[in-house]
Image (cartoon, rainbow, N blue to C red; front, side):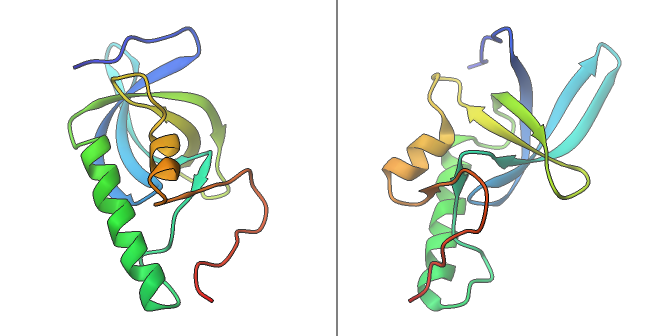
Length: 126
């Protein structure tokens, strides 16, 4: 299924899942120009793959696996509210799945992510 673009959305094809809140995608800029970009989901924070405790590492793996189910490689998503990221070559964006749901909201509802609006992130380990 392919997403229908809204005025402020950019379609992207999922290429690789890095972790629960970051993936790589191909974005078509013009008819003959396509770029690969890393996308960090702007509205959430997930545990880190190389976590500080076993709980964080396990939760990170579950979040990564679930994101791969929600936005499988080759699927088309819509990127909204695109912003520059602090890391070169990465952008921040809301990720809208083909069914119209925000992938970050799904991960939060399933307790695999937390809402995040910038600033210092809360630790996952006690």
